[in-house]
Image (cartoon, rainbow, N blue to C red; front, side, top):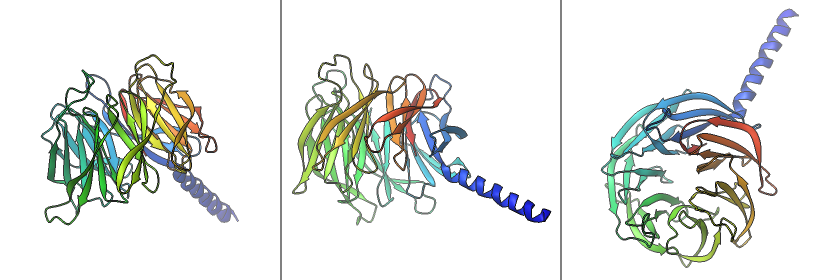
Length: 368
């Protein structure tokens, strides 16, 4: 009889541990490490029921300002935003990151990294250099392979300080059309490339369309609806969302909507944009004098109507992400050195604060 209860106790304990493990998923945090105590990439256990955060491990590296993860979630790729830029590939094993390889790139200030849908190559946006670089993904170890292309951009915009030349800020993939969209904050242009996977030396980008956004807007990041018929582009310098619809295989602007109220007089600097899992709501962050997360209802035709706005309990909300099931929003406040968790009302799209917050210096990206 005693053996029976001992076995039952052991099985119950194992079930509890397994249940707790299922509730916890990894959250990766990157940021700036120069002249502060930030050590690199931090991994936290994120509880999908409560939104709580518990430190798991860290990896020491310099200025991992943006991160990307493969579909199997066992590889993490990072840009290191340095004067002599660097990119790295890591294996995520046993709750920690292990370096596969790293590579210096012939560009200053890489700020964004993205993986193509086929996981054949990565695209690196070099802000300071005004270039886009692509690299093969090594088939055996899924590390960084040979360089494929370097595309150099030209031109300038109307902003005297931020648009004195090209500043490539991001590249986002369209898996429906095998295309990639490249945002140039410095020239108010977004470049659409077709991906040619047939080239023997590796995938090649072929220019298909140049989209001109509103002058002085400064395109930073974009997001798509589920079927990739609508694109939303976030303008950093004007804090405007531009909506584009794909008509006859061309992207045409059909709406522009400001984040802040018409009477807002402060400085702005929009940073991140994401769509909820159910496709009903769009969220965007604004920095400088705003420091808010804004939500918009997405109509059946894709048009946006403003729904709400929330303080981020910090300054400089540069990066934010939504939990996989869409229950939480996690925002990285770069200037106040804190990462804050909000609960999402999935019916209304509204945010409410939780008691969950961590302190880490100069966070710029959060990634599930």
